[in-house]
Image (cartoon, rainbow, N blue to C red):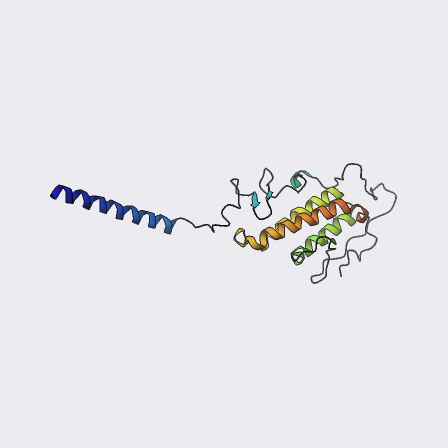
Length: 203
């Protein structure tokens, strides 16, 4: 009888100890929000948006995402154009000089919304839109300007909303995709040398 009682007592003690260890682990292990923990992928940089079934894949050095059409922004050098496109100003020594840009003015609207892509996150991208306009006006390479536009919009979204704020982070990144495609498909007609130091003006 004593042996049987000892066996049950020992088992009970082990169950209690196991429960205590599980509780201790729960207290000492960082907790991830259940709905957000699956969003950051194994490399610690790429992210998956399950609501829109979009994966944002990081470039090899984990500094930014590939563009929606698969371009690594870190490998696109200043001056790079799209295949078949050329700059209107080529610095050929003819005497024409692109004037310096107007300074950025906080509170002005520098973003031209694509008609199919109005975004509630536009306020985050004002300086990024300004830089994109300056890049176009300075003829620094349309492909270069566009991939940097994507990079900076992504950085703006990630700076404004942590991965725990996925309800804003991923809609912001998704709208950035739309705006990237807008300049990629429709930006050629706006890629012109700056005409005065009052540009870009903003509104």
